[in-house]
Amino acid sequence: MKMKRACSKKTDFRGYPVTYFEKALLDPNSFFKTPGEILKRNDFSREQKMEILRRWEYDVRELQVAEEESLPGPQLVTLDSVLNALRALGAPANTDRSASTKQGGR
Figure (spheres, one colour):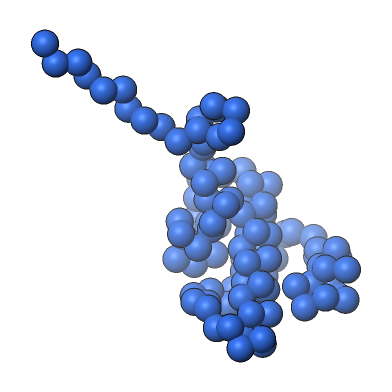
């Protein structure tokens, strides 16, 4: 008699299922081709969309720093496109990342 294997679902360190939102938040570039795709999603709240876009903004800034240090990486999305998507959501300016370091932090 053959036993059925249980479907293996991704879980976090506590064993809780990882949602699509959580996966997208970890690496937006793997889930979306453009920031505009996030804006079109009906299954994410405005706050979730902003959270994903803020993560993407951070990732793009990190790649820009790497390029300045002669370590080019795959930059598929521009910082402007991410910031434009955030503005389209009415997201407030992120003053925590507005100066001091290359990544935009203090």
